[in-house]
Length: 436
Image (tube, rainbow, N blue to C red; front, side, top):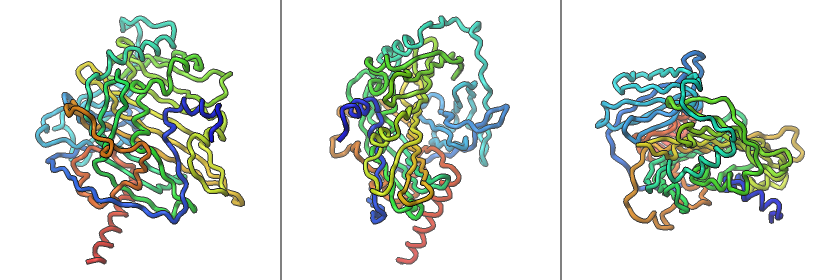
């Protein structure tokens, strides 16, 4: 049982549903057949987004079809894959990235063999902008949160989202689980929580790389949904918690040609329990949080381990070395909504009577690829919802329907992950031939 101090700490960690499970190798990959499919005629547009000067990849750049709700983000290699129905082939894609000038590119300018898109850094001069610079960074954050009912979507939405979990042992890919999720997004001023429904999922796991344990993540898509600070501000910036942080201004930037105030926040030196440190990106004119990047300040590895580890082998000590998050918002018709988030955990396993430890990196991320106003009345019944205790790798259908994924916008996998997918698909085909 957690002590009172640890219980108090756990309340401040909105991603406490992220639990690493360590199970013996005897566990097997579960599988269930998914019955639904979608028949869409679409065209794929792929390429890479780079800095125009340094030519470095721009990770998590957003590509959105203008006047539509279809979008995707670039991966860790700056690559994108955007899938658009044939009926919208005359559209224009807006490419945006924090601190860069956005670009609008007609679809007919994308090349069949891949398109390189270069963005220019946006230089901000306060003299060019008629904006009053606040003196109090904390007051600006409080004002931004108080305006969420005014600036963010207040109608329920039905979102289509792509969700992925990956586990790496040092630099080797160990496990990949992916899913198409339907998210029933409650209004930002509503106390109701978002709910999710699993449409279809797949997985690939190489247990031979997992030492003598199998790693699993509990919580699935809810681990990313709860990173939505503007929907769930009390998880990190409840009124009682503001006093535990120092807020300061950083250098301003731009996104989509808007002036953005950058606010640093960090727990005060006298606060010993693990809180957060990071940056908030706030629209200077309308006081809107457009993005946030932050991480857990691991002041006590033992306490952090108790927060994030549910089960572990008796002959091992397990503790996180990094816990970080990101959330990005998008705009439609003057209102903002959740568009992308991720959570990254790195942790070590120190084994008894072993010279070397094991280092694992676990990432979960979700991107909204489309949405429509939700007019279905009540959200799905309890039995149809994904439970917050879900282990997606157990619920996934194991690549049994590879054709299904063609019509969906996804976060384009790293090349190494693509190789792992091709490998498991080849293995499945071999097994099918053997059984014929």
